[in-house]
Image (cartoon, rainbow, N blue to C red; front, side, top):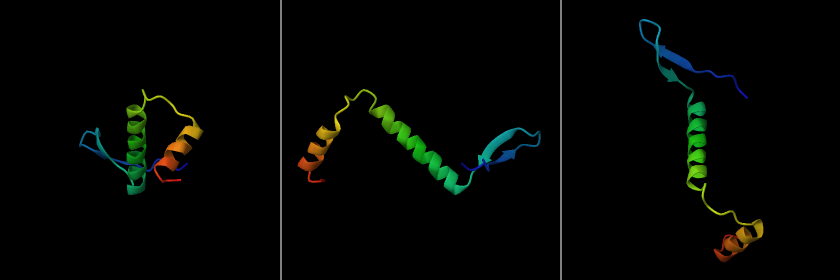
Length: 63
């Protein structure tokens, strides 16, 4: 795991106003946020078995 390399934009009193991240770190954070949104959307769905998932994928022509 890499060390945090963010930089801060501060005002004249030293109060942090913004953060500067590397583009790679920003992309990873956006991807994590997207993953969490999907988990939240599917929270109330009923789980299905692996075998049921394979059957659905075969039916849809994916497998």
